[in-house]
Image 1 (cartoon, rainbow, N blue to C red):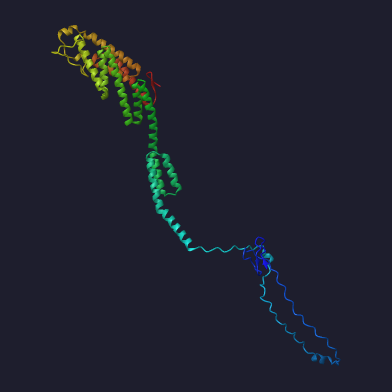
Image 2 (image 1 turned 90 degrees about the vertical axis):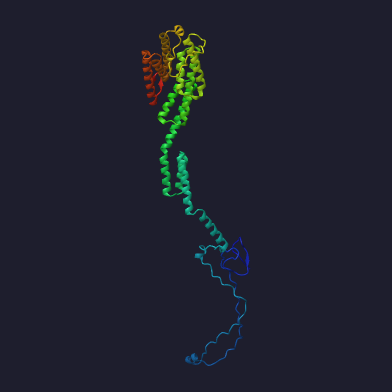
Length: 409
């Protein structure tokens, strides 16, 4: 029995081999079996010497016969001859490594599965579909840029560059971003300015200063133009102005000051706010009754046969129909009544100027100089001052400065 030289294997073999059939380790030169002993010829019995005459040398040379051939050895059948394994060469013994067992051939089923997988990949990511997908992504990114979503649009541009999109597609998206960036930046700045302006206007309205709110809103609209939001806020400011004028008219009515009441009503009616039409109409009726009582000199109503005409919006009280002689005799002198109205309007205009309401002071002084006392010097001088302050305020606000205490800061 022969065993494998590998100690981990150590399996037996019926004959020596070059490589172990179990582990594949090359085997060392196996010791050959000892050769069988050759048959020893039997020695012949000694022959007694015979005395013969010695011939001459030539004759001896001729007479000496050739030696006989050795006898044939009998063939002995020893079985199959052992396998001859050449000795292991010392130079190549260390360089050769055991060869691994041969692999099995790839089956047809494996080839078919690989072909099917490659076909599916090609159908899913073929060049035509990739170009169409990139075109769709470019359309979406252009829409994002149009909506001023610059962060998302630039991120999509970077992703398309990584995906190696077509140069024409990348150029189209880059152009869209470049064209919309200035407009989007202007929208962003306008939105920030609008937030500040709206907060300041609402604060001024809550503090009872609609004129200040109107000045702040006018400065915004001059720089950024008007839109639906600014118009809505302007309507709100006008409503606040009309409400304040009507509140002042109520105070004048409580004091029975006809000129003050008429001035406030005229200013409120110029704003043309339908929300306050009922209240304005009620004050207009109160003004008519107050005018009737002042003309008749008695709080009682006039006879039904000859009622006095009601005062109109643009008609001064002095344009009313002439009253009977007995009423004129009891009415106050026109000069004293006109002077009282002028003084009242001047005091109200001074108060409006102190509050910064130059537009309201101009309106009052205009009524004074054109309706109450035509060409009154005091009214004209104060009106010119109010107009100058109003121009300076508008110029200051347009330049981005603040108008405080009749000065531009």
